[in-house]
Amino acid sequence: MEIYIYWFLLALVLLGLEMVTGTFYLLVVSIAMAVAGFVAYRGGSFIWQLMLCALTVIAGVFVLRYWKSGQVRHQTSASLDIGQSVQVLKWHDNGSARVFYRGAEWDAQLESTEMPREAQLYITAIRGSNLILTNRKPQQN
Image (cartoon, rainbow, N blue to C red; front, side, top):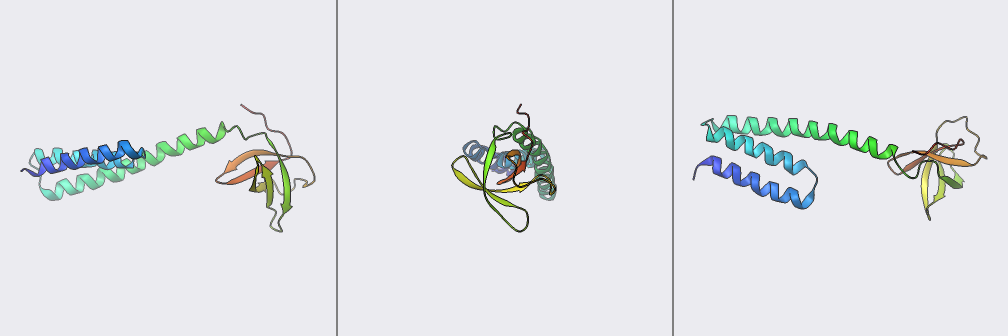
């Protein structure tokens, strides 16, 4: 069997796995395998097949990360948690706090160090698992 058939079979297997996982990274690798298969079909050497496969993976990962970073930023700005009040349970020496929100304890940080700790605090942003708090109620979208 010709080598390009193996490349295309690998691409199909990875495409099938991508449909199960939904991460898009296997899709990038599947596309790279198909590119290598096309190079093999056109008579390119094995070194060219590997190089173009690797370059396609690298370029695809950069494109995918850029696309996903824009998606995450868009999702966090539309969070339903923004503007909700929290109950402070404990202040730490470094200025962070432990707060009670939605039936669970969360780590939180003040938006600015000059903010009074005694005021009613609201969620202004979420960074990872940390809530960012402010004393002004943010406008919800």
